[in-house]
Image 1 (cartoon, rainbow, N blue to C red):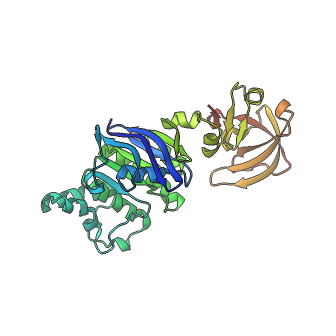
Image 2 (cartoon, rainbow, N blue to C red; image 1 turned 45 degrees about the vertical axis):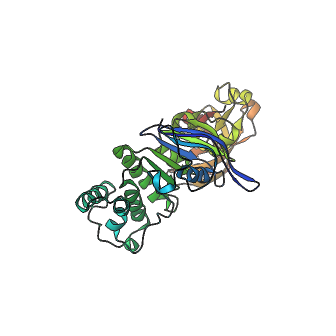
Image 3 (spheres, rainbow, N blue to C red; image 1 turned 90 degrees about the vertical axis):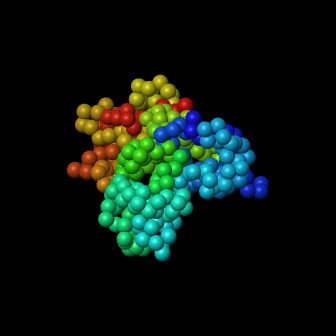
Length: 328
């Protein structure tokens, strides 16, 4: 194991922000700390970085880092706002860590050019960072963090300040960048789409504790408990008996909005109560009719953008099991 976190807690007076967390990150692995705002995930990252005092042990390859200051841990940090140096140009920002390590000029310039190419900013070296867009500034921040070849890359909500479309594109680019560089990384995010795009494993955090760790598909399909299921988009939770009657699944389940979809050949009858247009589908609120023990209950469903049903319409629905999560 490259990074070990054993029984780490962080307290601010009487408030416990992180409570007894254990976590492992292997060489070359990307782990996402996923959870709602205020759950302690950024505090845990800062404890790993050495920016927050903590109880417990943070170690690298078996060496306890308790006595190692931030600048000697060999970790790279990227924060939400990038924290670039406004008085330096792009190349000067990327080269900063290399200068601190006294890397010779020729090798430094070669590494800067290599990284700017990698993050899609070739030719930007002499630009002022204040002239860049938000997405371009975050690319510079990533290149700067990667320049000294850190043992561990720590990213704290690196994309959250960007608009949705740019965030989605940069998440794809960042996932490629992490793979191509073979980086070992811990990424903090509240966005499960982002976490599942970037990470080899996801650690779901709530109220200062890690409640589930697993590969993205397992976490998505089998959330550990109801609260985790709801956080991951399951707006409706059914007890095993109701799930068996409606879905043929004899387990407690969480249903995402995509679990039911309009289908003329579907076996579930419903009445449309509300509809909302989204980018690529229409979100419906429906009331089931003629469905036994769940008759009269309200569910979310989806319909195609072309000719969606209106409130008051009767529709038939089918189940898309990709939208169904088995809880526990």
